[in-house]
Length: 290
Image 1 (cartoon, rainbow, N blue to C red):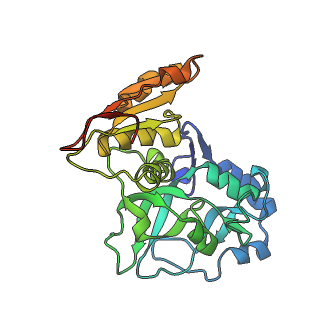
Image 2 (tube, helix red, strand yellow):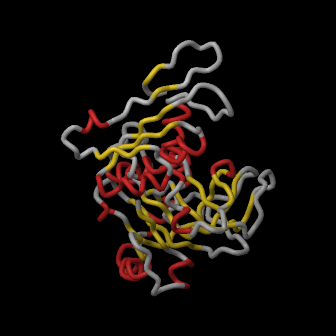
Image 3 (cartoon, rainbow, N blue to C red):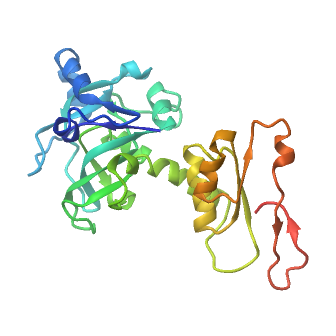
């Protein structure tokens, strides 16, 4: 997972490089002279606005047509529409890159989520609140991170820009120990793991009851690392995860009770079948996963 670093953050720290990050300032300087199309810019937003702490235009990464990453264009574009009561204007510090972003860009998801091109993509982000709707609990200056839903990307654009308008329900305050770059890599992967365990899997946090066990395949990946932590520390399940041999220590550090090397010839034979403790009057113990 990677992050885009741009806008005010790039201009203030022109020499700062983040591992796995893309510095958009040189790219933008090279693109603005030849790719800005007035008609395309007009289609990015229906109503430009002026906020007291924001410029009339913002730097954004626009997708004029489906295709490879070479189709993306860094350019000046209009700010999103005016805020509604439940929305927040965020000055974006970092935007996360996920497989879904790549599929939206290529057109692989256009049957499910057709985009009105040109569009600004981007789901994950971190940044600072610049304006808050009167129905929200956020204050100007708060450090936040969150996501832009796919429906809202189609409506008002995503997070590959200096500013984005997001629903207050889709953001939360950023903990101080977590850097902006790392916070921007959390929402999509963490919510995917939570949904798999708690929505599709039907698991819920509880204080007592029979022992439960979870098997996480690909535990060292973006979603897997969150799944291991949620299963162990939030759901309090006996957690087994698979990974390559080099990532065994990583998963153990994240809380996995057992980490299994999936490159081993007898991989499935090595996957344990935990004993699940019965609750009161629930009969003999059984073995398996919840």
